Length: 353
Image (cartoon, rainbow, N blue to C red; front, side, top):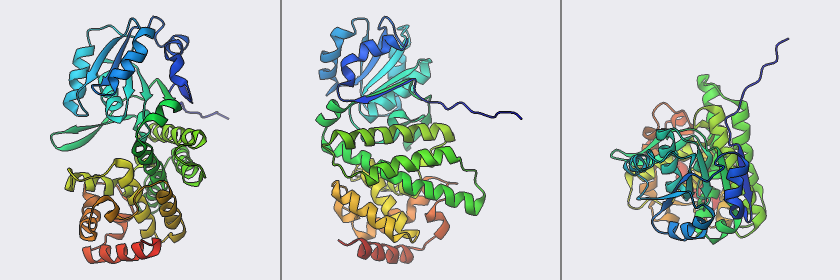
């Protein structure tokens, strides 16, 4: 009888702990990523200066590159600047925009990427996707998974709390996204990968049900692990489906309709997940989501991020257009504007103001 297995694309190293960055040079050498430290490090022009000052003495053979922003043009410029350096690897050292630019640049020049996250704002730090702004708004570009992920909890605690809150919303939204994937399977016969779904769902559930707060190492560890697992789940699925459903459609609609007023990715995804869960008729889970999001200081009503009820109704009505072909509870119910308004009134009453 044949034994069937599959290889799962995942980082060679995942190091999540307090003080993880203290041994960065040694980790890269020990794992044979870069024995001599011939690295291209991508950093921001702001907070990156402090990181460069800290690590430059440990990495004397590295070259440092400031990333201008989070656009496709920034990523291409970064790749062009790095391509003649004959490096062993690219290191993205910073937040989501820096890591996404470094991901794209590393893929473009054929080098492995080491993702060193300085905040936990979303699940992109270990995903096979680089999200970059372009002339049409924002695009997702397929890239290889990072070869290593390093998250120093001491550094994470120093970041503004809003970044951790955003990561919480993104992780919790997995629960809604997987339900949407299952709905697509039930109604349209869409293929579903049970392993990818389990990884994403359990990552979200672990964050949702953890009793700690954003200042606790135990909670930050669970959140960081959950975001990494979510990224790997997308690699397993070969698609963003395990972590992107109606919650992310609503997030994208906020970004496209109100680009100058939009809140953080995770805040919008968390709110979208709670509302989508309510639409499914799962009052218990929607209520728990709202309770946990509130406990961590995230919004559960559009007014809490500066949007009116009418604007939120418009966002939900537009949301399916952001991901053509993706089937979620929004496409399934196909609600009219008046029906969305009624559903939102029920939601707001159910979770309380």
